[in-house]
Image (cartoon, rainbow, N blue to C red; front, side, top):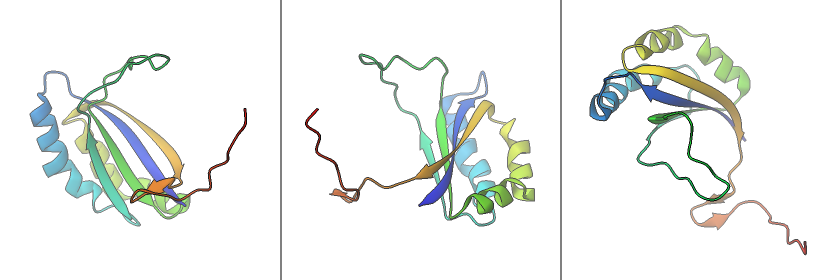
Length: 124
């Protein structure tokens, strides 16, 4: 099981989606890629939102989701205390107005089309 930092990003007001994406990928990503203990770094650019049934439309605009993957919580904490994290925080003001970070444990349920967890049959 890995520990991940998922960060919801909102682009700076007045900035185009293309400029946001360009800065995030070409300026900010190389900073994040240098975080110590980093196993993987994924950038997810939002392309749409879904509102359906009990799932209302999101209240806040999320333009992208950053996903940083670490082996342990201690590795994540060390990365967030690093000079690289300070550099990333300073750069954030150049292209975003808001970010919310969530620390999550990750368990793979399906990978390569194969279920990884035993599923329980219920007769509810």
